[in-house]
Length: 259
Length: 312
Ligand SMILES: Nc1ncnc2c1ncn2[C@@H]1O[C@H](COP(=O)(O)OP(=O)(O)OP(=O)(O)O)[C@@H](O)[C@H]1O
Ligand SMILES: [Mg+2]
Image (spheres, rainbow over the protein chains, first blue to last red):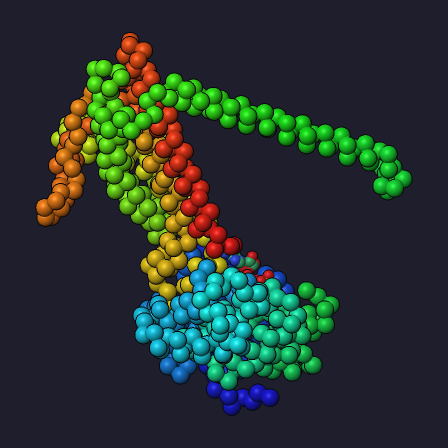
């Protein structure tokens, strides 16, 4: 299992976040994301998991009035992605995201995967074809769609759509991938597929995943963070959190006494 | 109300209650249908009347002849050509301006008191009586800018008139695109313009088009503002052709030409004492309604066709 010698890919340093209505949704969060590891975020509804996740790719910038305080530093270049001088678009090119509900564009399967390349100005068809195939293979979807790449993405099943969204996020070779409850809209088999996929992707990139499913966190993650009311209550090896949590609150939540 | 233990023990009461509630359903459905029929039947009767009265003029000559002092020979040529050319100007002004304004308001404008004010005013503009637009145009286009009582003036006036319709329908079409789709696009690193161009515009143009066509159909029937700016009511010539056989193949003299449009021609014929002209008026009215219905039909069909591939 994980050892402390693993490199840190990114770390939040004393991160606070304020929504435009003034609500303080994150309170002084500091924690690392280890490279090529899966970190799971758990906690009761409304505790700020999504808010925290969406700080990493500056998604909150899309809505006026939101305010970050503190840092999220990416390694090895030591860039603070929250710095006002850092372009959120550049950040999103390095850190991609998969959402709770599959959200493919109303375009073909091919165009969905290729879109991230297109916004980067890529239009060489050969390179594009290769990248799309590679990403679809990476998302374990290639064999199912290779004969109908130009079909509408909406014609895929929910689980396939979510894997398509993963392929879309994968096509641009991100360093970190964020998952916000990626399986909550899926059936158990599709969920198992996505979990398996996340574990495979770990060798290529660093993953941060929000989940409500305790078993899922235990199954796929290397590290787990428990949040409550905007605060990070406990962060540790997943094994440790689930077998011998350091804090009473964490134990209550995990054992279902609370939450 | 006394406490009831369970449905089973009070089966008769419960059934009576359901029946009573269902009676309300039926009653409302009947009233609704009646109201709907009232509107529809009235419209059908009017339309039928126009067709019955104008029937003798339903032939090609009616479209290829100029108006004349003799009712039997008088045709609609100058009027429908005038309508067509005015609509071209209306389209070319209202569509780019309206769509750009709608996109800007929805996607780019900061949300503050000033944009709120603009928003309220755009909605209000849609309710301003059309003759006010005519007065504005008379002062602005005819006198100040010296465009004359021309096709250009009429087109611009109707363009202004339908601008709110285009803006509002553009905004509504844009708003129907779910946040999740925008976030997906931003999430892979798209800029605002890429999101607007590759997604927002592409998924909403069915709705935008619908708004444009409905606006154009409204403009086609407008009479008051055109009379206000002083359109001619009797015209026996055509504006210079916009397309020429010699380079550069385009000619803009038609813009400054005098003109008439179909509703004005209809109004002119209707106001003659000689009943023979009323046949012409009825035929023109029927034609305007048919074209309007066709335009609206096209809008519905386009919307259906474009939306078919988009489910959210
Ligand atoms: N746009 C917003 N404006 C103001 N407050 C918000 C906004 N979005 C979320 N919040 C608040 O921020 C807090 C954290 O919300 P967040 O969505 O991050 O919770 P979460 O842990 O992801 O919950 P869930 O498990 O239900 O998804 C909540 O109290 C919520 O009400
Ligand atoms: Mg959430």
